[in-house]
Length: 411
Image (cartoon, rainbow, N blue to C red; front, side, top):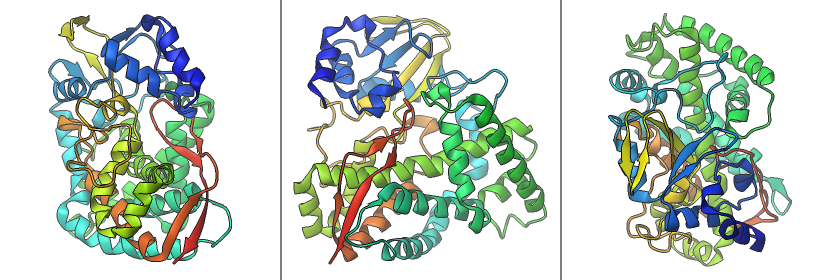
């Protein structure tokens, strides 16, 4: 972190702090701003930003309080700080309140049920081994492209039962959905709109085909949605919205945690050495990677009525942003929260998956992919060496990487 970023965070009046600026995440310079808000204004109002006025909730327990309180804080209208484009509404179940949220969510949870996860583990391990066995040795390559994207896209194709040879379409659509100017991205809306309508057309054809399938024999996401009363009559844009939610949830979060784990271990070499000497630490390291990375920086709500928090009055209709990234660095709750510690006593105490009824339904699948990957990496490589600072995406929502130069050395 640069000296300037620390200075800026403490030199400007606190009411002028705007942590929604995508550059803070692209440059990884957000930390002193969140630290100051946690210390001085844990419930903070920003009156003017590119995304409109909003409240920031930055402490761990305050975030949990908002996240579980869907009576006072609504998910309707979207969960990112940016507003949807009025001519491109694509609602989804995470952007809904009970009871609709529960009905639509329940329709697709079968794909990550424990019995199905047990079957998926063997598939994940086979794919992981194939990917990492083909990595070049002693030469630079982009870890994001060759490992993080490839593994998560293969798994996404599996849980959708998507044509495997065309699986990179899923990556492209995920990137389109998360590069919106409403998230701090730079892709023109017309380009995104065209690409996402292609996504809708493709998946509509798949759904029409899956209507002929027996859901007792096929538990992929499209078949489940095609046959569930809660999701089989969705309007086209709502169908698209739910697809994009599942694609992003299954792709961006895991892929950026896969990259984030490599980055963290290189920043904390003593932890890397501890891992190599004790590979049995992988299961506790995995949730620590997810906490430390926090692949989704925030979720937003809308106040349904006037609510007082920490002496501040949040008015009905106000935008409230829960900064998971900040909550996961709250040292009043997580000891040495700025550090990456692979053998924490309570590693699952983090906010990366959210809390309450909107908690990420694919959390165990994400953890399993990371666990299997690191189990197999440690059998083959003595080091995954970072060769330079990674390039980060421009987004205040997805905390991700576009390029991470590495070199591997085999055992």
